[in-house]
Length: 638
Image (tube, rainbow, N blue to C red; front, side, top):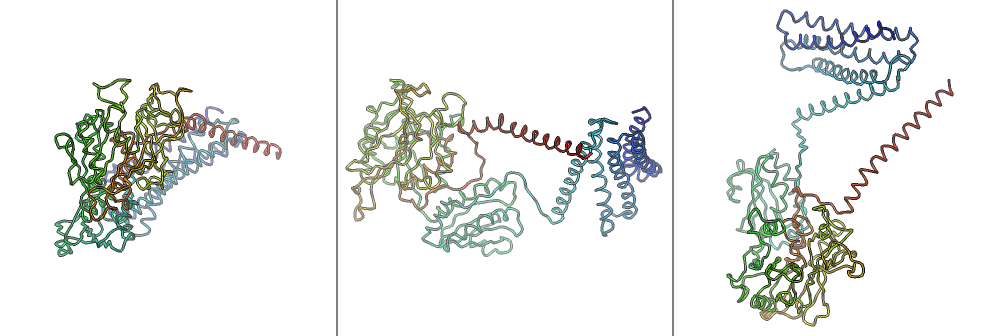
């Protein structure tokens, strides 16, 4: 290819780019200046010259016998002609518009769309053509198929940009907003449906929002579904400004509130009128509704949490480990209309359990209970009381012997539990295959999950969803149950996976011959076979109940964020206090940190280093074979 041809090609592109720039500057910055028509005119002339030079390049390539090169110059003529057409249509549009601020007539709108579409399509075609032609040879080495393919693909990108712009314009004109940020209103959970279905009185729900409010449209998705659950729940939408009498009846002074009314008792919560500030409430709308519903339908249940033995607590400082705090659990329980109180020696735990206690909760502890405290709990359960005990494998530092493992014979609480059918074994459970990856250290084999649940009432929600729910434990012991106990009915509720073993020597490894892989019981429910001493005229109504779980950290802030852990704790409490009709927890759309099991990590690892590259290589091989086959076909035909 001689120097003249190269100069013509360069001048073609320079004229087109220069013409577009001159035209833009003239129409954008010098529209009221005397130089306006000089700049615009030179711009149009340069664009026209670029198209002519593209035609000259085509003619020269054809004359010189470059059969593989000259056909692609037609694509150059097309994209340069689109730029020229865009400039000419814009001049017509500017003439028709005059001093109007926006197009009104059909012709004006058509001209506006015409010059914009021509400019966008020409721009994207230019990118594809010039880049492909520069990289895919010239003259006898030209590859017209690649140039055509690149130009076509970039043209598709331009068309897509035009479609997106049209959709955005139409949405803006019709006042349609698509929020692509994370915002999803909670759905009605199974536990809420059970609560509404079990209502013994009519509940009126008043939702106060102005018509057309953006938050109202989100909240309606939840409440409209809720009204289909029970005829006892009536739901109405009001506006404080337009219906002041209804606002007075529900005792509401402004919009944005949801009010539940049962007789003279009311409970309300604020969603808000601004979507940005209402996001958090919308994501937890189901729990807010549950909390309000329980407040107007049920008497508050009182839970006494033991303290003074190193238990997990919600009163820990902000710098406390998430494995030692139960602030998230405390928030759950308050939403479910429970009242929490501490119960230690200072509150009389060595004497007796208070009469208003609906249940006593023990969450961990690395120090043994006093004999007097256990005797008080024992007397409470024998009289029909309820206890939830989540145990820990470690003892206090001054009692650490035999590698710090809890000494069963030195702990009065554990000794008492063994008398009613559940023996706690402090060997830490491990699993070398099925564990949760958290720290990526060898200690992860103690971070276990399980979805093995029995049919007992306290875990019926988990059992129905065992394909999606898995309880997490960390440094868990295990239980040995005695179903044949004459005074107590003992039921297994949660078991580990079958390849779990007790890591007795705590070396994070399975020791062949010394340790055994088998499913272990980590959750149990116990119920007295005879009525409590204070049953009175209804002896069958009051029976002592105890729930035992072999790992206290399952209720910690770190693990309770797992939905299954929250469901287990809440449903166990509901079974203890006799409220099994409302098992389950509220739905939420709040972000929760995702954790992977070792198997999931292996899938991601092998998928990224083998599967994805393999698919790329396979698709490349298929494409190459098809290209070679096509070339053979063309060669045989010629």
